[in-house]
Image: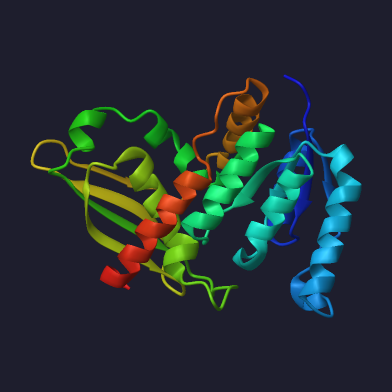
Length: 254
């Protein structure tokens, strides 16, 4: 497999991604793009982004965007304009019009945009047995994602930041089931769990203490799809559906 070069925007979660990529022996660099609050105004921020991506793009194949949600759309668009494939951290909180525009640009340039939902790569889901019996319209789906820590994002609800993982799992593997319960909170005992109630074949999986190398699995899958020119399915269209579903669930359970 050809060796791909990475660029990263974002120093918090991005630093973890950086370390993992280095351990995988990838070429990886940080882009000198700080939070918008560190600039005089938004115009200055955008000028710096454009300049930095333009200068670094010759040495990058994949740009990994690990920043808060506000400017993800602008960053993804700028990366595509510089002919870079993109991985963007969830959640994707943009409307259908903006999402369609990004998808159109990526298709025109034959570039991939993937959204990082790491828990989709749990082997329990990838190797699910009796899937037809579990993923059934008569079955009820419950999902829980709580963490002890406080939120780093004041304007982002736990449903979007944490619960979107649960929604992504349901849409990817259990889309025929109906929601029964959906809970997601900060400052609670750590819990990551799904339960599917069924008269025929029930299923539950607690992945609170998961030790699988999920980010590494994600990277391998994205690179494989990219190198063999297969469309990556965990894309902006999928992420947009997760967003819409999460918004609906917030109204119902929030």
